[in-house]
Amino acid sequence: MLIEEKLLDSVTSRAKTSDRLRMNYNLHDSLDAKAQRLLNALEPGTELPIHRHQHTAETYIVLRGAIKVLFYNDERMLTNEFMINPLEGRYGIHIPASQWHTLEVLESGTVIFEVKDGPYVPLQPEDIIRL
Image (tube, rainbow, N blue to C red; front, side, top):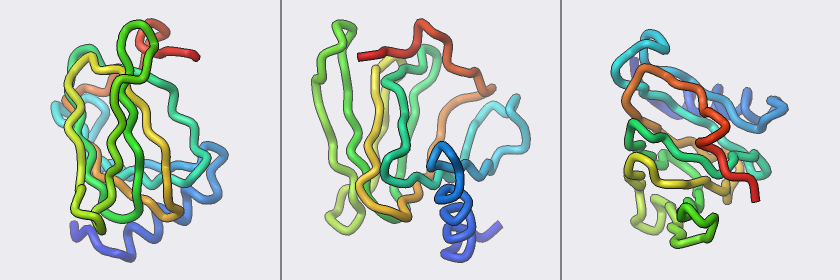
C-alpha cells in the first residue's frame, strides 16, 4: 500500500465529518496484531483525554500538519510540552510506556502515523486523568 496524499486527504475528509474530529486508518490486520500501526487524521478541537499506556510505548510521526504533545506526572501536573511540526524540523515523538500524555491539534488536515505494541487494549478508567 502506498501512503500518499490521496489517502491522507480521504482519511482527513472522514475526520472532518466525524463527531470526534478524528479518524483512524489501520494498517495492521487486526486488533490482535502485535504491532498497532495506523494513520490518525486529527482536526483542531478533537478531545483526547490525558492517558497512559502501561504496557507499551507509543510513537507519533507527523506526516502533515502540527500537534502539541503534553506530558503529565502522577500528580496531574504538566511536566513538558513538545511542538511537533515537520516544516520546523520536528517530525515526531516517542512516548515511553506509562507516561501520562495528551495532544492538541494545531492545524486542520493534520495526519500522524502512530505505532504501539499490540494487541489493542481499550483505555481503562485508571489510565485516564480528568482535570
